[in-house]
Picture (cartoon, rainbow, N blue to C red):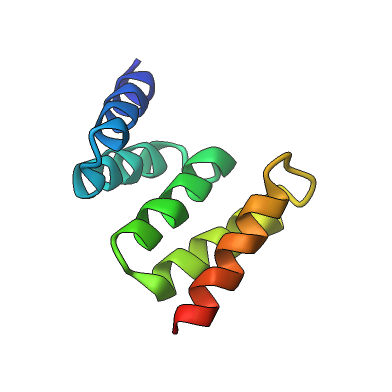
Length: 87
């Protein structure tokens, strides 16, 4: 129940562009389910939104290692390229 509540709260914060609080919710979920691919991906995306490039790359690459055949692989690879280009 706690994980579902944190994910719902995260989604609400993302829709409101409150990325720092969304990241806190994601971190809470990852403390309970550290190998959740979707939450690892979301942490990477949120870190990118908060301009934490190194951490974003770490989590996005970890997501691809865990879930190499994910439906959003192309999006994640493009995001990684974009982050590397900005650095």
